[in-house]
Image (cartoon, rainbow, N blue to C red; front, side):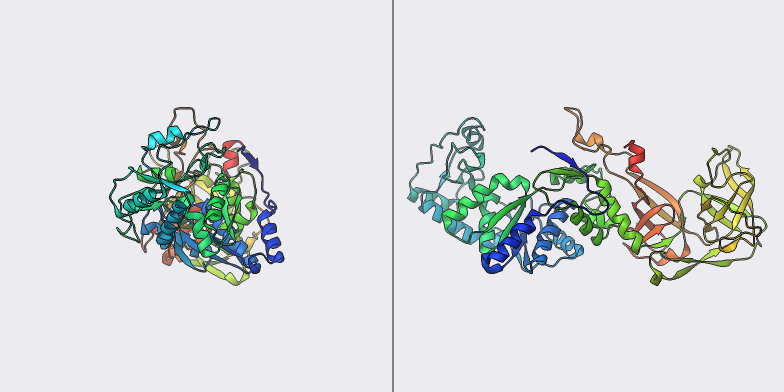
Length: 564
C-alpha cells in the first residue's frame, strides 16, 4: 500500500476516528445489546514498542469511551519463540501506560476447543491432512496471477483425516511431516484463502501447557475463534490484517459460532525508527544496543527508561489519531509530546556537563551563601530550593569563548554575563595550561547585582548556569539521540545491510556535575537541567554514582542538524 507523509500539528489536530463512528452506531442500534468488548492480543515473543502502545491506547481507549471493557489475550501459539519473560514485560508495560484489562486470557486456554472445532471442520469435509513437503506446498499455492494446484491429499476421506489428525496430536509424526489445512479454494484471488494451514507439528515445550501438545494452531485459525469464545464485539487490528479478514470470517461462519467483527486501522510508522520485532531482536542480540530497554530503542520499556511518561505517550497516540491508510509520523511529534508534558511536571535543576572552573576573585574565600530558585515556574506548588554559591564555580566550557563571534552573548574576556539566579560576573583573566588549553577563568562579581539588578542599572544579554565547585556532585550523563541517521532506516542501497544506517552519535557520555540536592534521587525521577534538556535517573544510578539519561533536548535540534 502506498505510504504518505502525514503532518500532525502541535495543536493536537488529528485524523477523524472512523472506529468511534462504527462503535457509536453499533451501540445506538443495540448490536450486541449495546455491549462493547475489545481485546489487545500480543504474541509474547518480544517486548512491546511504541506501535503497540498506539494499539493499546486505541483498544482500551475505545472501550473506556463507550463504557466497555478490554481483554488482554496472549497469542501463545508458537512455543519456539515465546517466553514468560515477554508475558511479564507486556503486562508491566500496559499497567505503566495506565490501563487495566478486564480478563486475562491465553490462546493456549482454548487449545482443546480449537482442536474440537478443527475436528468439526474435518467432519464437514472443510479440512484435510496434507503430507506435502513445505516447498512443494509453496509451489502448488500458485501466484497472484496463477491459480494454485490441489494437493494430492485433498481428497482423503473424512475418516482418514480424523485418524491422521488424532495421530498428529498423539505425537506419532515428526515436525514438518504433516499439516492440517482448510479446504477452501486453490484458485481463490486472495492467496490466504488457498487452503491455509490450520495446524502444524511442533515438538517443543510450551511455557504454559508444557509438553501436553505437539500440534499448534496457526494465528489465522486461532485468532477469530478466540475472539468468538470471548464474545469480542470489535476486533481491532492493524491494516496488514485486512487481507486476513475473509479467512477470519470464513472460520466463524463455517463453525457457526459467535460472530466477532474485525476492523483495521493504519499501523504506526515513525521516522528514524525501526519497529520490526525481528530487527529489534537483531539489534539486541548483536550488541548494537544494551538490551530491549536501551533508552534508544522504541520499546515501551526503553522509552520508560529514557524518561518518557505514560501521559506523553497517551497524548502522542491521541494526536496521531486513527487512519484507514498507512502513513508516516514524524518522530518530532513524539518528542514534542514529552517536552510538553515534562515542562509542566519536571523540577528544574542545574548541571554542568563539560566544566571549566571560574574563580571569583573578589568573593570572600570562606563564604558560602544560599541562592533560592523556583523548582518549576509552571507549578507554584513545586516550591523553591536552595543552591549553594561560593568563590569557585563551574560553568559550561561552551559558555566561554576567548575569541567569540559578534553575537556571542556568553562569557568572554572583559565581557560580563549573569549567573542564573545569582550575580553578574566579568571575566578579567584567562589561565591556560602548557598546551594552550583554557583551564581556569578569573572573574569578579558585582555584589549588588543579586535578584536580577545591578549596582548602576546596567543590563547584560547573557545568562548562564553554574554550580558551586565545592558542592557540585559528580554524575555520569548519557546523551541519547536518534538511533538511525536516515528518516527511513530501510532506505539503504540495494545489497547494503540496513544496520549501516545506525547513528554513530546516538550515545555520548559526559562526566559532569549536578546540584547537591540531586544526591538522593531515585530511578526514573525526571528533571529539566536548565538550558540543557530533560533528563531522567537511570536504573544504573546509585548514591555516590549518579547516572542520568537525556530524555529530550529543550528544542527540536535534529531539524537544524539534518537541514530540514
